[in-house]
Length: 203
Image (cartoon, rainbow, N blue to C red; front, side, top):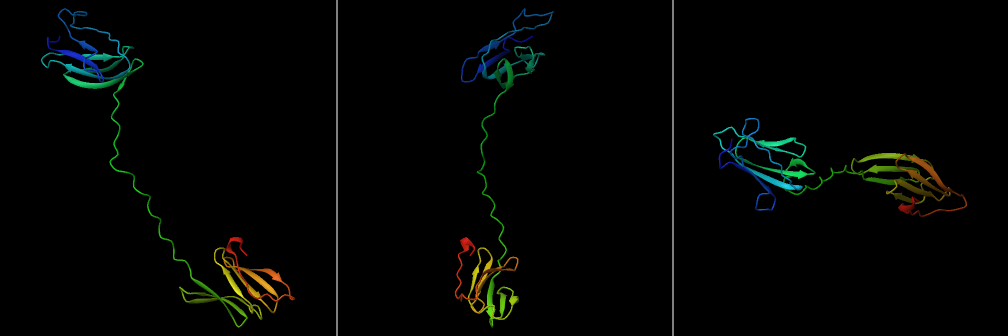
């Protein structure tokens, strides 16, 4: 049984007065035990329960939903928050989380590999060569008589090289990636001199 000062009160959030208060009175007995059942009609919402129970007596307060399923109980004085939704008891929602710090920026990309610095040249109208300024190494791409007696232009955007031969009437394209040589023009009656490139059109 409860002492006269023992009670349980249920509060709806933001309301100062309890929507239910329970107390075991003298004569409240069920099957010879000091028990009492109360039904309370509570609207959906957030609630808090305050229990003031004696530690000298064996006392228990049970809270059940509308299906008579035990939601929680008190065996001593305490405080609990819960929510009701459609007659079912749920844990009281926690406050919105706080962000301790803003998200970090995306990591900077890894440094790129230092590109090659290549110089292309012709020698004695017979040799098309490549010189690597970073390594100091030479490489012959093509050799032949009177091939390179005209002009030379490099399209570094698309990795092409163009050269002309006035004596042969030719303009040739070199794919610097595959080192393939592709004839662009061959006309012995023409005398191609200067060569210019437009990287956006690969010519």
